Amino acid sequence: MSENSPSIGSKVGRRDFLRTSAVAGTAAAAVASGVPLSLFAEDKTSAPESLVKVLYETLTPGQKEKICFGWDHKDDERGLLRTRVANNWNITDAELKSDFYTKDQLHLVRQIFEGIIHPDWHKRYDQQMADDCGGFGIEQSIAIFGTPGSKQFEFVLTGRHMTLRCDGNSSEHVAFGGPIFYGHAPDFDEEADHSGNVFWEQAIEANKVYQMLDEKQRKQAEVPTTPREQSVAFQGASGNFTGIPVSELSGDQKEGVQKVLKKLTEMYRTSDQDEVMACMKKQGGLDKCHLSFFTDNDIGEDKVWDNWRLEGPSFVWHYRGAPHVHVWVNVADDPSVKLNA
Image 1: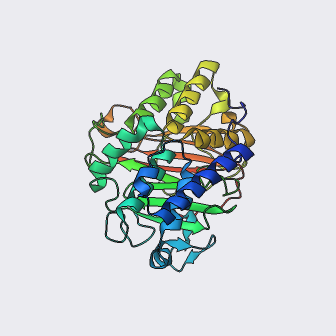
Image 2 (image 1 turned 90 degrees about the vertical axis):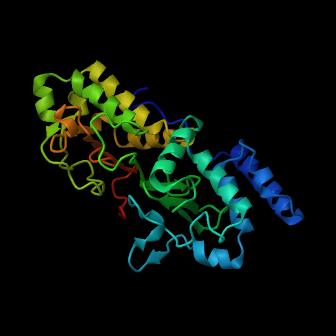
Image 3 (image 1 turned 120 degrees about the horizontal axis):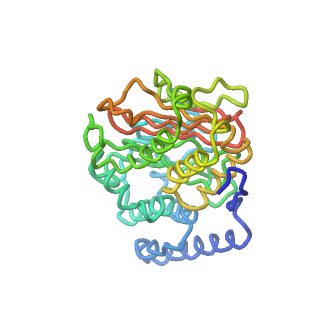
């Protein structure tokens, strides 16, 4: 797929909107009649956004007080709460696997999660959560911003090595509903092969591009110091980018970068993958990006670079693989979008 290929995904169409509304309406009827939502939520065709609305309608006033907020709610310490991202945090105090939620509500949250993540990655994400926090729902929390079913709402799931969002494209200009995070630490200090790390294959794909570079290109791509991992705000078209410009690569090398981008996005549902590509196209495609390999934290000193970064005017995918994997993602179609990290 070319960096200039059109986006398949877009705003929810009329047919999808009607289907989503019908799903939510059926679920609301189920709530009223006492039918267990766990049975309803097994419908794998339901859009995650529709299930967020179902979940919202099951919440008691006390639950809504704790986890539901206005669209632009600001926390005194954390700023605009909806757009915050971090490597290890809880957006609200109520842990999912606690008596704060019913079994059916927890089941709905799981179905929303499975709708955001591509089915091929469910088992790998489960492995990540088992290793990092003891399993799905443990040391994790959620928040809902705006009113689900309206034109503007967002569901956020956070925990150790996780910030995920479900927004139905109601967050303008940004992919994924805002910045996201993923990571994994089967061992805190991993060996050079990163055995058991479900995300290491992304670094392997990036290092295949490095192997394709000639000596002069490698010197340009190698950067001596890894930047602060949270530094993923957009620089815009005139930014001071490190590494080698993708525009200067040969055709086969560019194909390699395309494969990296595909590997990075394959974990997510198709609509989010398409949204990333639409944002990439609007900023000028991969040719506007730079690829950096950071040489200061090379586990095993094998020149299989653990830390690397793909960055453009309004695209940052920062991969920190030492001592274990942390990945910060910030993608938009407009570099004026601010980061809250």
